[in-house]
Length: 115
Image (cartoon, rainbow, N blue to C red; front, side, top):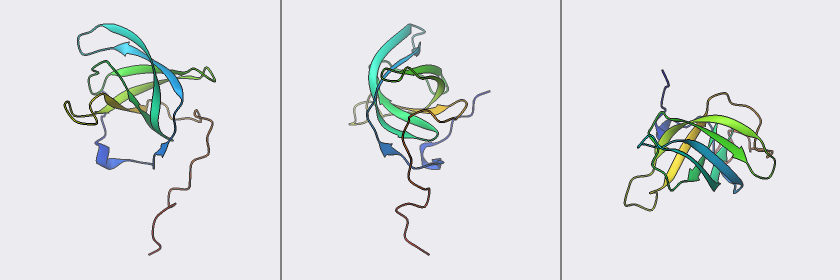
């Protein structure tokens, strides 16, 4: 069974990073698709992308980068609310986190005020 994490329980900070990707899987109507899009934000544990397809929470999707031809499996953990500015945004989390994006992430305490 796949565990879907609530958006408020983020494990790592996100950074804005746009890279061309192809996501593929099955939408809420059980129609298989492959869509070229781009990341909006990325983290060590996942990414947010914009998609024209409605995806079900917990659905597994494949993601392949266009520039470096890297591929990975993700699970949909968040969807933007319909009719809002976030409509069409999909939050995805790695099934098996690994180095993937080719960027250095800031330390986890970056931007936090000292205690």
